[in-house]
Image (cartoon, rainbow, N blue to C red; front, side, top):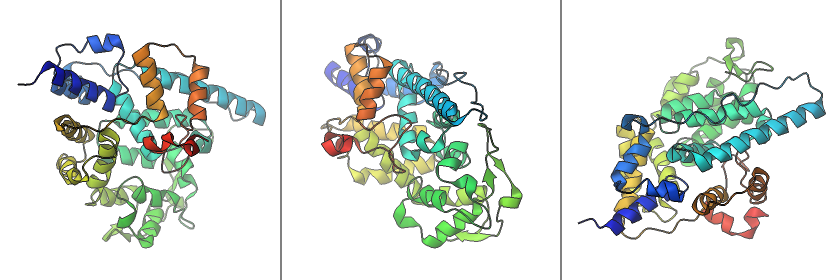
Length: 359
C-alpha cells in the first residue's frame, strides 16, 4: 500500500527535479493528486486540458535600428536585454507550466548560445523562444531549428561559412556537444559537415529567419559518419540524428540533470531505447527518467545551481526581491541566464559549491 507520506515525498521530488519547487499555494493545489498524474500533466499538459502559457518575450520589443550611433546602440541593447531577462526570471518564478521552463533552461544550457556573442537582444530572445517552443517536442525538430537559427549562426560563425572557406566551429560542436559526443566523430567528419552546412546567412538588420544562398554553398557530396551523399543541412542532420550514439548521449545528459550526478549510468541504455523507439520525442524520455527517480528508495540530495536556488528560495519563502537584486546575485554567481560562460554551458551544479566557480 502506498502511504500518504510516500505520495507527498514523490510529489516533492517531482516538483523539485522537474521544476524549481512550489509556493505554499501551489503545494495546496496538489492535495489528492498522485505523482503519476502530476507527471503526466506536466509532460503533456494540453492532453489534460491545460493551457500552455504564452511566451514571456512575445511583443516585448521591436528590432533596434542599426542606424543608431555606437554608444546609443549599445545602451539600447543593454536596456532591452535587461527587459528580456526580467521577463524570463519572472516566468521562472510564476509560470503555470514549471516543466516547460525547466526544460527550456536545460536546452539553453545544452546549446549554450550567449548574448555576448549574438549582440542583438531580440535575436537572442528569439533563440530562447525557439528552445521553449521545442522544449518537450521532438529532438530532431529542435536540432534542425537550432542549426539554422540566427543566434546559433552568429554564435558559432555559421553565417560566415562559405563553400570556398567552410567554418568548422558549428560542425564540430554539433557532433561533440549537441548530439553524439566527442568519441564518435573524426576530423574528416568535421570537414564534411562544415562544407555541407555552408551557405546560410542573416540579412543585415534582420532578426527573423536566416536565408540560404546557393552561391555561398558547397554542394559536393561527402561522407559523414560513414554515410555517403551528404551535401546540405537536411542530409547532414539525417545522418547525425540517425547515429546510434545520439539517443544515449541525450538521454544520459537529461538523466544526470533530473536524477543527479550519482544516478545509475547502467540505466542509460534503457532510457536511450525509449527515446529511440519514440523517434526522439522528448516527452517519453522525460517520463521514463522521472519514473526511474520515483522508483528509487534512496534518492540523492539535490544540489542546486544559482538560478534554481534563487527561484526555489523565492517560491518557498514568498520573499520579494527586486529584479536588480536578482540579476546582481546571478551575475556575481556566474550564472546569468542568456550568458553561459562557454560553449559547454554553465558549470555543473556541484561546481558552484567551490569558490573558484563564482570568482
